[in-house]
Amino acid sequence: MSSHVTIQFPTARLRRLRQSPALRRLVSETQLNAHQLILPLFVRAGKKLRRPIAAMPDVFQLSPDEALKEATGAYQAGVPAVLLFGIPETKNSKASGAYAKNGIVQQAVRLLKRELPELIIITDVCLCEYMSHGHCGIVSEGIGGARILNDPTLKLLSLTAASHVEAGAHIVAPSDMMDGRVRAIREHLDQRGFVDTPIMSYAAKYASAFYGPFREAAESTPRFGDRRSYQMDPANALEALREVRLDIQEGADIVIVKPALAYLDILYRIKAEFGHPTAAYAVSGEYSMIKAAAKNGWIDERGVMLESHLAMRRAGADLVITYAAKAIATWLREARS
Ligand code: PBG
Image (cartoon, rainbow, N blue to C red; front, top):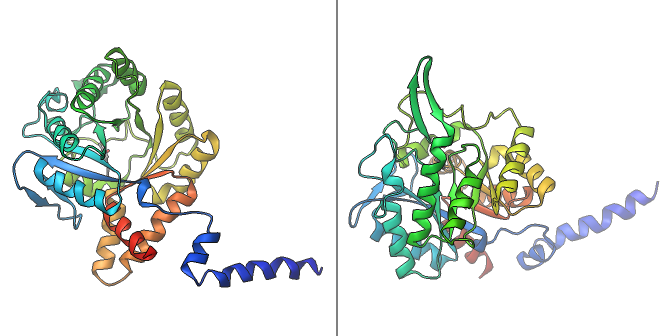
């Protein structure tokens, strides 16, 4: 049929047009923008401390003053938001460092808020970095081994979220995967008058080997067992839809899919099903793979970073949490000038 020909020509014409960057942008369906990126930062006690993380080149454990420098640099490059993780000086079985008024995250939030009032401060709400055993909830040692106690954990997560907001956090991001934690945190925040603080929930969080380098960065490797009793099985997609539905019903304002690149189908389905503000978390292992291959000269770092993050946007992510946020923002700016 001759209609074949008339369909093909316009497509080819548009493709040739894309050789000019401005014309390519004019007709592109998806854009990667600096203003949709969130930079995770690891904060620990000290002054002028920048401790490299071996498996994550260009990522550091930072003292609050250094975190401020890092956030300022990213902000100036066009990244509007940070996601804070804390590494406490001591850990215990109640994770008390997570909700201490003067805990490390709370201190960092106050400093960032004071010195960089335009920056959007998001805090990771979890207990694993603060627990002596490294699990995300309270552990009960019983017959048949250790168990995570879901409901008692909710109280500690709520205290943690409220203490972050009291310090000045704009958004809280619970990453623990306990059942009912979004509702518990929402009610606790509302009771304290923080009715306008959004919850960005790690709604579809898989038990993933891609978190390996993070556990070194946050010093949160479980001492025993693994997180498979509370994080999701990579084999399951419908389960992710159920988790997201529950989190939205409980009051999640933004839902996160994590990891990102190996779970683009999940991202796509969640966005299509719920149309809710959705974030992709390009996790530590994804970052490390690209950095390692690039260091060997096997792939082009800039090209692969930009392409993979664009793919997350194309799959449905409104926001992207990524360790490469500042680099991406800088590359995007260069490409435009
Ligand atoms: C804490 C938490 C983890 C990540 C974010 N929050 C680790 C985990 O669940 O083991 C992973 C982030 C990354 O790998 O970059 N619960």
